[in-house]
Length: 216
Image (cartoon, rainbow, N blue to C red):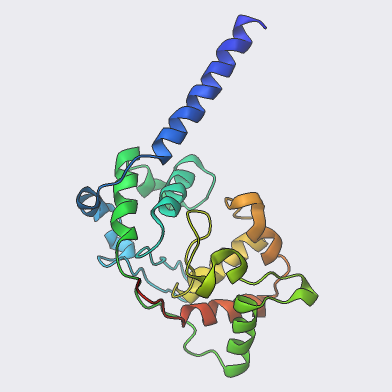
């Protein structure tokens, strides 16, 4: 093996180790509160975010898994997830600040979501079906299969989506459906979203937004 190849492998391994170390940093809640000044203009002081029908909704961060928040911020930084505003703000944070902000928001109580208030009974019933049981005739896996009981989240890969803003959920599902987002494990969400109609997306988004999350 020549020296050029060896140097190349060394760089790749070093980059991977550095990325792993960044992801594994322990966050500090107090420092995270200070660093969150970058976030509050959109995600608000209590981490509840804002539902903006027809516009860019800002998701609830309060109560999300810290590892999930860390991964999303790094993905915005490195272009694995696209959003011009978030790339700008994520790049204002270093690795330690990302870990701190994630720790801060993860310990906040989950706040009520907005959106879905005008959804009719039939639409909500369809949303509940998709969230709880899926639709095997259409090869649509239920939300709870990955996001856990009550769709309250499982670890750093599958965030809590119950009590998340309806328009934010719908926007993300459309992004996966249209190949505009793919930073989840094995693009599972892309495969599922492509099997969902626009009405399915509206239905499950409305139903999830109307769910409350029980504090542990």
